[in-house]
Length: 169
Image (cartoon, rainbow, N blue to C red):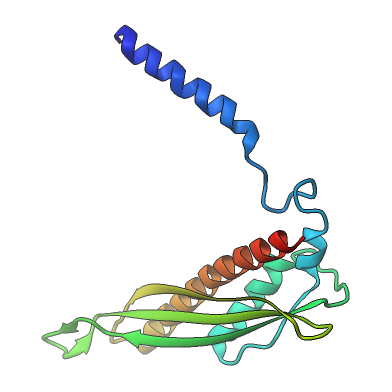
């Protein structure tokens, strides 16, 4: 190891240590007082369909994982669209051997008192699953893909809602 490699390594270590104190957790009470309480006070409106059920449960869990039910200050409304694409067809069986589910969630966060718009956004994600000629296996793989989509959308939506509420406070 040459002297210049050691110097670069020490410089990188010094930079990492000096910047380590600059980062703050998203849910830090010091940087955003009341953010955790605001997140727990978000009411998630019912989302139709099976994937909407998964998404709603994941949103409730990520916004308020405590199990407590404080009075709602905000309402999160999500409109979810799901499309399935089958890009390849197996030539011998003339059936799709894979599918891609695309999920698009348009969401709005409003204050319950007065109906003022706090934040509006969109989140998209996709999940791929293998299709088989076995009906139950195909159905189970599709549901697993829907669950993966719901989790990914819930993560993105909850982070963006937390960012919007953090900017507000």
